Length: 406
Image (cartoon, rainbow, N blue to C red):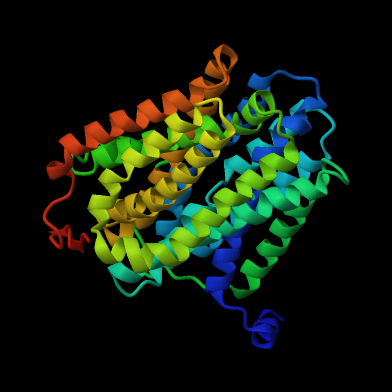
């Protein structure tokens, strides 16, 4: 039966992978503008709203390294199927919950097997012929990330007028469909399996990675990068409602604007402009400056300044997310690639735990503080990476453990 369906429809595995990323980010795009207003109906404080962001990240932090190692050992396909099924179940529970406990349970289930994007990235890296195609494929994921950020907030804002639950129900249904498609049409791509024993200790790959002095500064930069972003995503809707009296519709439109910028930047400008005229390592360092300034500008209580800063940060994060990932992957051995991506996902999850907690706490002191802290964090990151730059990246095109760094 499986073979008959495959022959009849012949859906591209690459398309399924991109659809997987689309759904994962679509959920995030729905949550940022809607969640604060949805959770208000449960009569809870702002710290509970940011905790819903953090709890997913907490469980993802523990699961991502293990799933990454597992994908190196048993393959990308089974790990991706588990992750997709977990997302579908988590979103459906979240959508139909009538208690705050149910909301947390939905996010916990989703986070417990949150390997969608990192495994999808591994999948596309597996089928990449060279380093340039690797960066291009990672850029495609970034472009899909941007498109989902356009569709998610817009669709979420519209559907929320019918029912606040409806956007989450739709995402749950789509995740279920994606799981079925992946089962029938997604072949295995990892043919260079890692035979090492898998440790169920989620800290072991992170400890191992942090012992690598060549790559440690990059990991730390990735962590601070994630903290700056998640700091502001968690309080974004609360901030614009309080400071500018903007509604959920405005929040959705602003997120859509971010998505448009990310899509254009990563689908077209990344290849035709940024990577054409600049080295990846150069972009990874110097793009931190405008990214930091963007958040400081957003802290100003003026609508035009906020919009201008939002545009700058959208450009900054869309470039940095791709080039930082590509540079770090350039240091990995082929049979430990999944573990490496799992570590990156885990560090991003850690940033999504710390960011919302910090953001929610300082927001109570002053609404602009999360943006100021994000900007200062990125400036410190720039100084740290710049000072250690020669130790992070060897000469361009030098092999590190047999891998050419671009």
